[in-house]
Amino acid sequence: MAPNASLVSTVQVRELVRRYDDRAVLDGLDLDIAPGEFVALLGKSGSGKSTLLRALAGLDYDVEGSGELAVPENVSVVFQDSRLLPWARVLDNVVLGLSGADDRGLRSLDEVGLAGREQAWPNELSGGEQQRVALARSLVREPELLLADEPFGALDALTRLKMHVLLRKLCAAHQPAVLLVTHDVDEAIVLADRVIVLDTGRIVAEETISLPAPRSAADPGFAAVRSRLLDALGVSV
Amino acid sequence: MSATTLPGLRSREAAARPVGRRRRLGLGKPIRFGSAIGPVLLLAIWSIGSATGWIDQRVLSAPWTVVTTAGELIADGRLQSNLWTSAQRALIGLALGIVLGVVLALISGLSRLGEAVLDGPIQIKRAIPSLALLPLLILWLGIGESMKIVTILLGVFIPIYIHTHNGLRTIDSRYVELAQTVGLSQWEFIRRVVLPGALPGFLLGLRFAVTGAWLSLVVVEQINSTSGIGYMMELARTYGQTDIIIVGLVVYGALGLISDAVVRLIQRRALSWRRTLAS
Ligand SMILES: Nc1ncnc2c1ncn2[C@@H]1O[C@H](COP(=O)(O)OP(=O)(O)O)[C@@H](O)[C@H]1O
Ligand SMILES: [Mg+2]
Image (cartoon, rainbow over all chains, first blue to last red; front, top):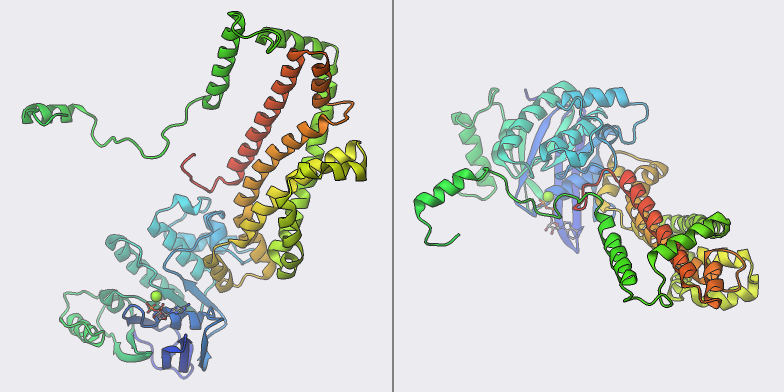
């Protein structure tokens, strides 16, 4: 369900430039994300996906650059590693930085299927469970924008599929705008309302996905979108 | 298994073995009372040596003589009062040293200015063994209790400072990023991320500090003391009483073992979130 192009975008990026050592990694990039829209970002390794995400998350202090950037106040980030504090119990990780939010934290853990594990140490959880805690930590803040940098990259294929289902459910419930970085074309098509491809510092291709749910790779429409995206990524099939 | 084993035999052997049990890498199961085995063995050698006359009584008293002497020392109250004096010195020196080390580490670990001002002098102090400062300390403070406690303190605060400071400064930058994305305030960041992250370093420093405290204690108690375990041993030396000297050594050793066990217990409790090879 691609939302209608609304008047107010959640994210508005204009002419964004980011340089490392005089090499422009982002070079005049424009991007809009509508409220509640799920955008997947594809790109070759080293194309600047993380650089863009870090710019949106406000984590690029020492990076040289220019451009306009409008992001909402309330942004959550999910990293590739779950980045849980090993010395804090699961619930304390979820409500990190929030006060009096234990009830919300518990509900959020319930939503990601980890009810009853709130007193566990992060080390006691599997990789997939840790990443679900990270999701709970993001969503308990009810973000207007969720930024995720290859959040499932370190998980096995089966766990990854389960995480796709979970993420779709959570996004339907909470309606944040999402920018998901992934190197997996199928993952992008399954999850997103719109898939964009980053290359040479700009968005070079864009696909609005209007396939009916549940999306399946067996669908001929799916295959067509996928081959266009692979083309844009410079992979011949 | 040899290469000539028949296929039939081999498969039967494989079936008889429980399936899927493989030796776990790492140190294996902890041995019950494992840390007692070494000392008990040593005690056995000492006893046998004394009983067979292989160890000369004037060089090293027999264990039973030591036990009897210890009994006498306890009966007339000398052991307790000396032990109490020694323990007080060590604990006061240790406590003050820990506080000083932690405070300095926090100041220099959490602020650039603090580091600029403090770290240099502390590194210089670190290069000078505390015991080398003794002549100066005696001149400044005399030979009383304050000199003893300050000497212990000086030996204690250095490892606490070094390891806590290192812990504070080596917080994973990924956690710093996380703290920023969840919008922690400076104070929350210190409380939730920096301090717990530095705790393992502090506890490591604590183990060195405890060892250092006993070491300093032994030395200061043998200089012009009129009380304490070290004094008791010095006095025994002048009368050639090896049994009393050994009682003193045993007490020092027991104190060292007990205090190390306490620190390790604290470590296990405080770092229960860690799963390491030894646990
Ligand atoms: N801190 C940095 N210093 C120098 N170069 C960097 C830094 N971070 C990233 N780069 C460079 O910027 C380019 C884009 O990196 P990144 O955004 O991480 O790519 P992606 O996430 O798409 O794989 C890469 O060529 C990388 O080497
Ligand atoms: Mg990246």
